[in-house]
Structures are given as C-alpha cells and as structure tokens.
Image (tube, rainbow, N blue to C red; front, top):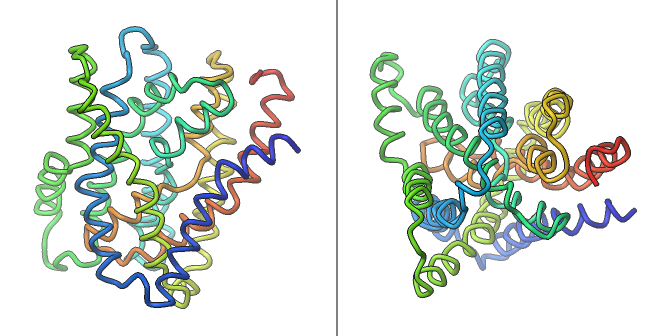
Length: 318
C-alpha cells in the first residue's frame, strides 16, 4: 500500500494537470493559440534550459560510472531500433509510425526521473548519469525518426533528402543543444552564479506544467478513439515490455538500489510530454503521442508500484 501511495503521489498530479488543461480548453479558457505557443515555448526554451541545468549541476567526475552509462546507452539504442523496425513492418497506418516509435521508447527521464529517485533515496545523483546515457539518444532518434516518418514530408522526396534534413535537425535541435552545453559545462566544472541558477530554475519549473497543460488542452478525444489499438500496444510496451526485458539484465550486471530505480524510470515510466511537443513541432498530428502520454501517466502508478514492489521483494531495492 505504501508503494502504491508513493507511485500515485508521483504520477497522478501529472494526470490531473493534463485533465485540467482538457477541461479549461473545453470551457474556452485555453484556446488553440495557447496550445501552439506553449508547445513552441517548451520545445525551444523551457525544456532545453531544464536539461542544461540538470547536466550542468551534476558532478560528472564524482558520480561517473562508465559501465552504468553504457548500459543506459545500449539498452536505449536496442529498444529504439527494434521498435522502429517492427513498427515500420507491422503498422498498417504508416502516418503514425514516427509518433508510435517515439511514444514507445521515450520516457519522462528528465521530468519524472529526479523526483522519483529523490522520493525514495533523498538524493537524485543517479538521474544525471541515466539522463546522460539515454536522453541524448532519445532526442537524436526523435529528430531522425520524426523527420523520416513525417506524414507531411513531400512524398517525392528521396531518403537522401530526409537524411540531410534529419542531420540538420539534430544539430539545430534546441533540446540537443541544451544537453550538449550542459555536458560541457559540467565537464569544465564551471561555477553556477546564484542569479543564473535561480533564473534557470524558474524557467525549468515551467517545463512540466506547461507541457502537461498543452497535452490536455490539445487532446482530441474523438480523434484518439481512432488510435485505441496503437495506443494500447504502445502503453504495454512502454510500461511492461521494456522493463521486463532490460531490468533482469541490469540486475545481472550488478546494478542495485538507486541505479536500478533510475533504470526503471528510464525504461518503464510515462511517455514524456515533450514527445507530444516535438511531434507537433515537426509536422505530426500529435494525437497518438498525446493519447499514449495520457494512458501511460494513468497506468504507470500501478506498473511502477508493481516493479518497485517486485524489486524490493527480491532484495534488489532497499
């Protein structure tokens, strides 16, 4: 019961903010122009600032564990490539391949990770290493996949043109720029002035509520009904399949406690709200992304509780 309450406290506020956004939009308080502006602000300002701050304030030298970062990197890479391969061959509606793949693999590592770990252990040091090993890949492949699989792309454009657009997108993506700058800042061990720290903290705090409000306000209930099956499949992959595949491997590699919890967040937490934002910004409909974010947020309270209970019962999390 304690684990259930903890997981509910971690995930249900996110679901309630999305619900609030939906209700406010239905009442005409939040207009479509707000959704578009909020998505743009989160994508180009708030989320890059948050990721920069998370990495810039992490002491990489003190906490670095190459084996752990490599495991995060490899497991993320395998997940992305396998899901993308299967989606391209099994999904009948090719217009949703990009959104489906991103919704399946891309976790709320930066938004939920630190809070979840800190609630259990009182510190979130491992979240920085998990972010370092996974979030750059999340965003590089998000740009690549959403560009190549974009339904708005010119049907006559060749794969070469799409790859060029993907490479350009990777180097100009605000989120990836924020990650790169934060990593360099941490490596150089530069001090963070108080004024800068408080300013960045204030901007970072806008990321989650704005993204969640935009998801709720932009949620198209009737349109989402057309994506019930892919939404259900993506939710099962995100919350159950990926943890079931990679957590036993993590245990075999000797990862325990805080490191294992960080991996659980990486593998089995909610599909990140920023995935919806990026999909919308890159020419996709966004309905499937929003639907999966809603369903994974709702059900993750139960699935995260189950994984924590199982790992704790087996002595891997204390």
